[in-house]
Image (cartoon, rainbow, N blue to C red; front, top):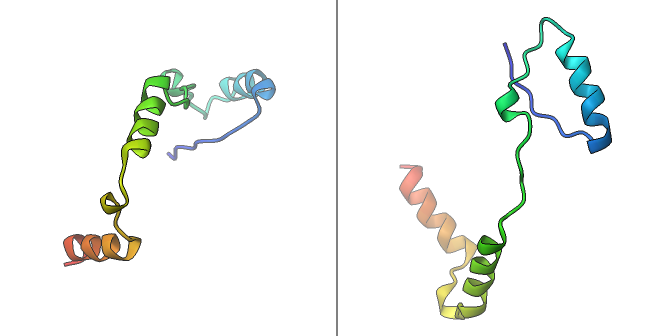
Length: 75
């Protein structure tokens, strides 16, 4: 059996779910039927604060980061 994740318009959701629930060969996991993808405000504030307080010397180039990752994971 395969699992599938789809994105559909909100107004089509009830119709689509009813259609799926009527199919005996399809199983709908009610637990994961819906989840909120919004980032909480406290987390947004934390990230914005970190960006505001960062200094240029805190950053590294992508090339340097990639080299380090390659060294670590592509042994």
